Amino acid sequence: MASAEAEEPYAYNVLRNGVQVNSLMLDKLQTRFTDPEGTQADCYEVVAYYLDGTESAPSDAFCVSSADGIDGFIADGVSVKYAPGDSRIAITGRYDSAQLTAMSGIVVARAAGGSVPLGGVRPGVYLLQVEVGGRVAVQKVAIME
Image (tube, rainbow, N blue to C red; front, side, top):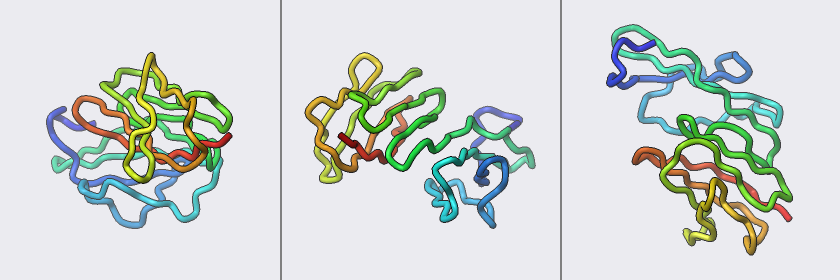
């Protein structure tokens, strides 16, 4: 673990099912990583590295449950769950706000009572944006009928 909570990591490694998948450490400014060999049954974790030589324990796992659904952590202590056919995207944990945005940038639904209702949302690909402590985490999700 890092010796000071306020210290920011300088790099990361991504683990798939407990095995590192990136060949070089990812710079702290690199906020995305695509695993070209990932499958619908994989779980991912991140390990952070600090300038004082310490490293974090692996993060909570984010597991891919299907190409269309989501089930896992989107931000610190905040998890989301959606499966094709659900009438809402469930959000658990403490968050400030959440919204579902179409690729055109139009907000189509906002969180209410721990979930984003999907009534009236047409099938398609959307971005789920969850704000936690001034930071916004984004997850792409395909809404199915």
